[in-house]
Image (cartoon, rainbow, N blue to C red; front, side):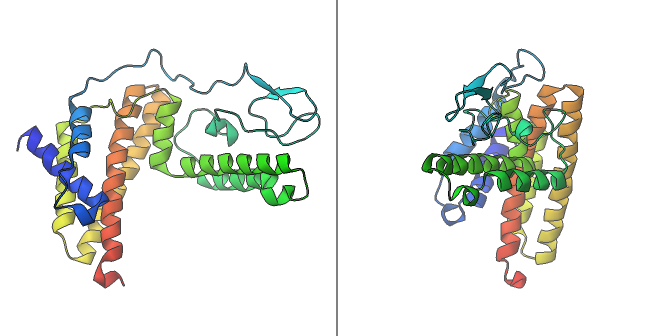
Length: 257
């Protein structure tokens, strides 16, 4: 098969997994275009390795209540202990006290504990008897903390956030013909399979490959190989979509009910 044939088939299968009700009528032009752009685009190296996208050390904000200046990442004022307005740009790694920063491999138990601790500090219920402004700020802080937690706990969204943190563009990543062909084969196999146990085997195989890529992302990050981080994050993104489509098919299988 030619590269164009691979892309045509893969884009059709990926789109059908996202929108099964229209699988036979849509041309998948948007996804096909993205795949072609990803494969044929030239990789662009960042200006320097391991750039921090969210530098907050030099910035400060004035407390709305007492007027002193606090670091922009501080949730409560150091002097009057009033809840502060969330930073315009929040470093999720810093918010959850993750060291060293940035990181990909995380201790999810510690992440859960930190989330509960932070949310317990700012939950709107704790500010029910406070001023309307403090209640509003607590809701804003709670939303930021929850968004950061949901981003970091999921490997796929964590990888995408890591790329933004390092100022890397996922869309410009060139995936290999071998990888795209492999994804196409996985999708075709899942599309044609009707046996529940066989579908679970496909899912388990893809889950194992996903874990391998997650390890490779951390290895590339530890080595300062930002192009490797970008490539593996792109592969993880495609694997994640296909894994979810297979998982959905298992969930909807008659023998699963």
